[in-house]
Length: 148
Image (tube, rainbow, N blue to C red; front, side, top):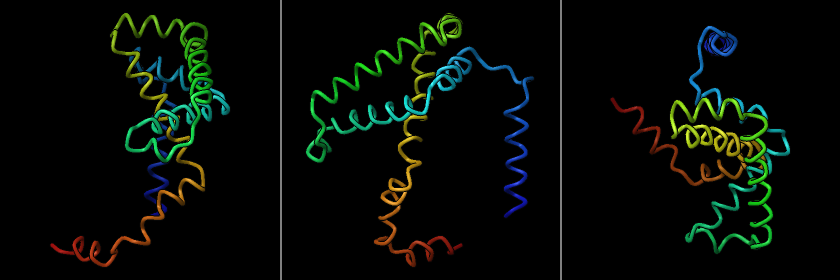
């Protein structure tokens, strides 16, 4: 197990550190967007995603987010996106858009993943996500998995 982890870590380090792998313009834009987010901005994006998910008709009844809070979050994220695209990553934005007009959506999918990671790395969230396990029939699952 330790050897597998060491090998995986080594491969990841080599891939991430090797400048010989050219990034596509879309990947370069996504990297720029993510790299220019502060910790506070990542948390604010996570809050914005939480608010958006809370707007789903099946979930809305469980959310107590005020329209004022949603608007403030939308305004913050709007200003953040404007800064990222017109200041921090303007050159990469132009290159990515010229190569593929759909690149904006692809790049912001990466930003969305970062925001979700921000939500799910909390110890409290991890506990909540895994609390269902106390009700799962582990014996039944293991029995199925051990069958050939």
